[in-house]
Image 1 (tube, rainbow, N blue to C red):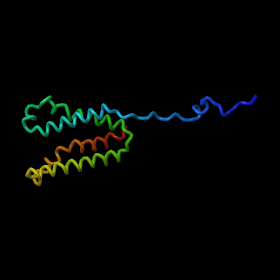
Image 2: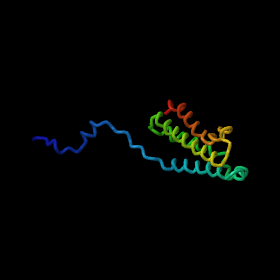
Image 3: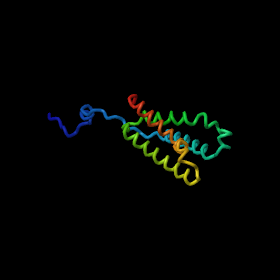
Image 4: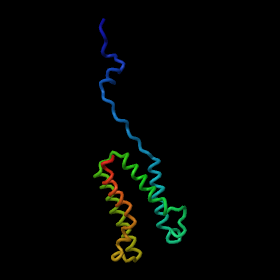
Length: 139
């Protein structure tokens, strides 16, 4: 009796093929967490001294640590190469500083003597770059 090789149950193929890594799905809850954190920062910065003075929802105490933890989790789970991550963050940094500079110039703020205040709001991104470089070997 001859064995018909054209009709296999797929078992031979399953045994010979190496297992593939599971496809990573996007974690939308982490995107949402970052959006909420950034929204809180924007609301705090645009609310002026009155908002900061009252520290609504204690944003000043929790939002930056929250953003660092969420960003660190996203970086640790990402398979994106470090250089690409740094390039993306550098683009965000340059665009953010540029927008802050335009806002300072438009409002008549003395950005030439207070340029540290112009880039101050973007130090979160600078620290993300530093922490990415330091944490990359742990990924």
